Image (tube, rainbow, N blue to C red; front, side, top):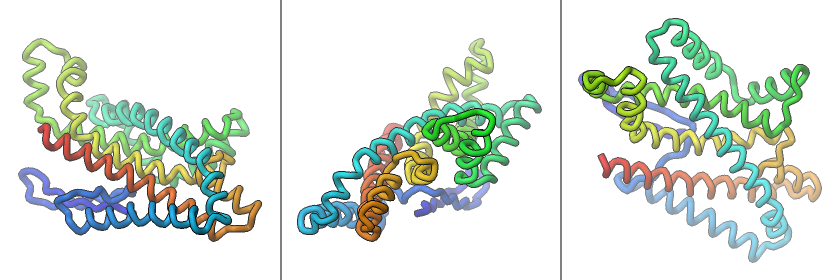
Length: 268
């Protein structure tokens, strides 16, 4: 589900519509969306409970078969997002660098990676590069997703850093700080409040995209579902449960992001 936000640029009067591949973040200010979130989240949990209690064959067996896949899904997502944040930080700084070479390398990385589908990157790292360097399936999945999302993180960091008033840097320099010290001690700590919500959105989007790693034989949630379905031939029931699990997880995380955004907004 794409999330659409309307924001107004300062001093320009232009409205920018940003569309991301994350879930819609529920906010009490948006009564319709907040109501829809509660209905969807409670409804999904209720459906799962109904199926495993009153339709135990085969839903209970499916439910017991999936937890290992959920853990692997979170493992891939967390490892990839941590690596993506690190890559994104250096990419964002590179995009802001006055050094043409560094800026050019960072910009090319962003444009190239964002222009290639994640699925193709997964295939390339695991199968194509696998002929040169043997990279395990799990490591290939994490690396591919981190490289892909690192490009998006780079733009988040760039925008977050640029949102900080240049007067902050000038004030730090006037106190004798170098450019690097001003960035580390003054600009980045303030930019964190701006970039945390978008990073949370990317985390949810990455978790959904982690379903693609099942093609590399990584036993994530979708892969475990496929294994159960291929053995029991209960395709409808299995994928219904898998879909509900993804829905519950993403809706839960979207609520956590909403709470984080509210607290950050209140602290400003």
